Image (cartoon, rainbow over all chains, first blue to last red; front, side):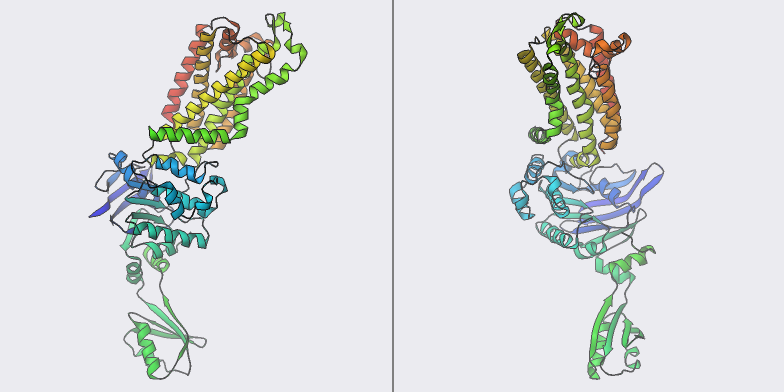
Length: 302
Length: 244
């Protein structure tokens, strides 16, 4: 049974339609991504799920409850990390967690959470003295301190350096392993590809695709490219004859084979049979980025 | 209740850590008093001030400094900053209410004002022989109503200002007007009568404070106006206040 159900969600701000028609279900224990460019309606969608906004149409159900009517109960069960929400400059790490822990009936142990998030040495550091990554980890800790069943995380790693971003991803996976369902908003392809079990791609207020990251990629861009430099000259026909191969081109001394299915295996088998070794062998697959371009007809801009 | 206690405790810590604001709100009036009191001629009773010294005459106006600092400057700036940084919004996603934070801020503002008033009265009494407020009940009522009126105006500023910068842009002129009519910039006996009269009706109502301090019951109209301002500005602030 899904823990979050969004059905034909619609939300306007005055004349502007922020969310036209969005539906998706999130299953217990998964990391579900809401992916899309800026202004696509991602944040509005999760704000409706979090009960911060009232939808103009459609329905939202979280753990079988209504985010507005049952707000008091849901706030105990759902942890929310909002985009660009900060803390007072002089508030210290441990104080922030103890403060937020006091809001919940069955909070996590702040000290333990500080340890898990690698903030031990920063316990008594004021918020203003934390690095971007540390602020973000504290923000995640605040979303988790109530021992929620669902965590909603909006633009988790925006503004972080690559190392801090990877650390944060590892952290989110550990949180999921504890049984927390995660609804993740992101506009980073790499993040969605690495973290999410399933994704809803949102563009202009609508869901344009809903699948696993691999499913999305293979649905819109099933072709792969094998690129290599043969040890001896090679007749193209050896390759074009293969059922998996759709095209063979040359660029410099390299051969580029485009195909579907298990094209890599097919190509390497043929080469092996003719005692040709392939130097600089590379397999190029479409990324989620390519899939996005296919889906929306636009390049993804950060 | 547990949550509110923790919020109040946390906000109190933050207030105490902000030394400049703490000095401006709690200690500044007393510091001005001490500096003025070091000038001998200002300690002499003079018929101009009803046979009190200038220092004694000026003490209630110094209280206006605290009230204006806390009510019009500090409170709206803190709240607008909290809104601007998404702190109120984030609270709205937890079981704690942003209203608890607002209440905690008001409690702290009142405590700050009270501490400042007590410090001022005690130092004025001990160092310069200024009598403590002679009409304690009237003084308490005037202080409470004046404070309420100023805090309500401050909340109104916090309600309409989207950012901390905007809050300060709105607060500065209001602050200057409050200080001017409160007789802080120019002692009120130097002001033309009609300006001094206006000061009786602008928050925090310095005339009522002065009357009560020197032993006269504050004029009901002066108190009434403060109550009206407090209710009207408070209601407008409640209507206009946005958490984000």
